Image 1 (cartoon, rainbow, N blue to C red):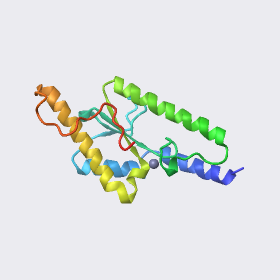
Image 2: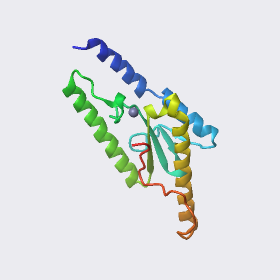
Image 3: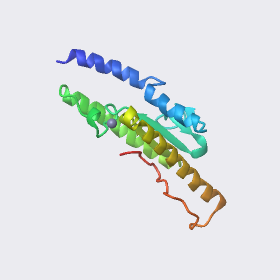
Length: 166
Ligand SMILES: [Zn+2]
């Protein structure tokens, strides 16, 4: 039995699932300071993405490493109640995949930012990467809009449904 750790976990869960969690705020503040405008928790889109940049047709998800089974240390399964956690986390994972497929089908791009990528040591780098992905998406949109020839330089083409840092 690990009653205490379960209690702690459910507290962590309610914290992670609540709005305006700290990692989300970090991303929002940085984007805002860099001139990006967005909407939050858009319920009309699949998975109600944390941050939606309509102009870029891009949805950003800030994923907690444990709840979304990241490949980092925090994403590891607990040692007790393995079956319970396996089922629960698998369901989360399936849902994440479905949501991204739906968004892609609707013509949206998705960026996943993991909580561990917002730790102080790597935060700045991650935030810069997000901005550069958004700029690439914007460039690609402009090319499409003005039907510029392929030879017009784009540094890196943004993928559909790009996952940051996987
Ligand atoms: Zn992680």
